[in-house]
Image (tube, rainbow, N blue to C red; front, side, top):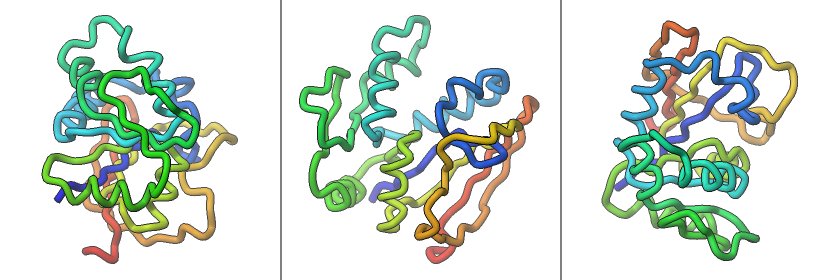
Length: 183
């Protein structure tokens, strides 16, 4: 059985919106290694439509990405969308109905982790149905004051158990949590 691992860039005030606009100054060798190891411990991506669009417009044409880029471009990508008809990014599959059931089926298959990157709306849906097995928060030392929050719905109350912390020299701290009720 696979695990769903949600990996999220987040600010000190909980913003996860558009990390490409604020995370760059903190991204160093430790973060590169972390993201590399995380990707290679996974064999498929779970993405919402907005995150998919961003990734699909960047990764296929990005140069100098080595085996990380090859992995991103080659691995299966499951995109939750009711509007995407013909995904252009290699090995992309659209889940347009019965989202919870379809993703639960993916979890039942043998394989490595299913990596959920960004995709706030999808993350919230999977949290509501207790499908997320691990939360990896890349906490960045910045306060933005506004933007889409990682946990913005009061109906999503969850108790999480901290299982690992990993500080980076740039100020990022990786916080790894598991749902407390499963511990």
